[in-house]
Length: 452
Ligand SMILES: *Cc1c(COP(=O)(O)O)cnc(C)c1O
Image 1 (cartoon, protein in one colour):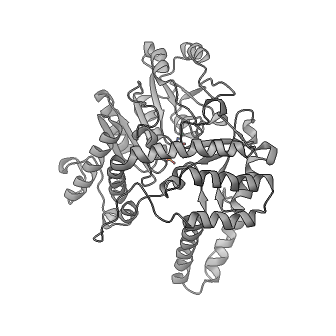
Image 2 (tube, rainbow, N blue to C red):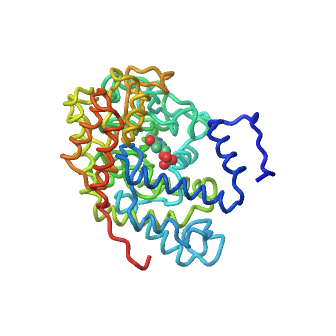
Image 3 (cartoon, rainbow, N blue to C red):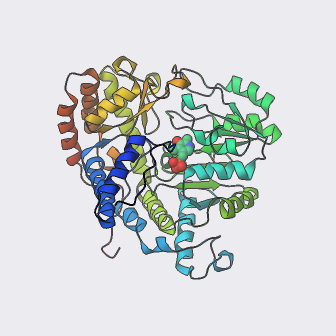
């Protein structure tokens, strides 16, 4: 199309050559219909490669069930339903069935997490964290959270929602080797800094956090624990990790699309009625307006499946992670947490510095259709974020496709082949595709009815 403009000198945060390629595709297309087809084709290429030919071991991902996928493209997703559930509290009329869907979602989430309250309107878990910091703090207050090089997430640091709320951030002191909270050092720092909130939960987590102990330390000045359960949400709901609300956390957020295996988005749960007004009145009208009712329907469907299958599914994810970790260790790869059974989550963390750095290793594995990610691990400097020593692996997807102990050993062998260089990545790739193809069916979900 001759009239499209390219402005190559414009500053972009995105990779300039990738954007330039997109402009070439648009400019070379004789019609917009074909441009649209390019989008569809790229989606299809991803579906075949990542969806059918890869061993996806990315810790934040999970395959959604057929019903969840169908609901994500449903008509209800074109409807507007600003406000709280119930005709009087909505801005628009016509929401009677939307109220049914949303109330089912809220009540199912409460059941999964044994909480008094739940909210369904967060289109990302990041927005759940923004809700917590907006509802429970004032600018200038202090928050203690886990630093990024040891598994913390921007969601609780200066560069994320806590920072833009104007909060002072102090580090939760961790043991540099085990990554456990150093409770003595914590108590000393906390008594000095008097944080209003201590955010626990991290993107790299192998073992539970001392929530009860920390809640007791910060109680004298009214400090509250906020558990960011983005990754562990499913494990918590399935009773396979700790129970943050039961152990004293005031509020928990989590990503519905990570271990919980629902549509990518966020949830928030709490028990104290005093928190209801500040949290709900932050979600609407501050954080969410058109909150994607198709996504809420998919979340409700995922929650129902979770109540039916979650305990068994989550237990299998953890046992697969433990088995994979042991098998990787037998391959001569250093696995963190070895002295404590490697992991109590869906994650396995490898120290791959002998085989290059985490980025090089992740790229090499990608050539073999094994998808993982580089990760900072204890001993790495923050500035090494692009070439850290670690590799993070998650077992959610392979578990949902029905893989077990034997397949974890096969996967460990394939990873060992690539890291040691004893087989070419291209040869390993054929085995990875064959293994993935041998497990085509999703488990731990209901079949999609024909009428959907
Ligand atoms: C993934 C993650 C988030 C962000 O969740 P989204 O659902 O992707 O918005 C927040 N906190 C932690 C610890 C995470 O790992």
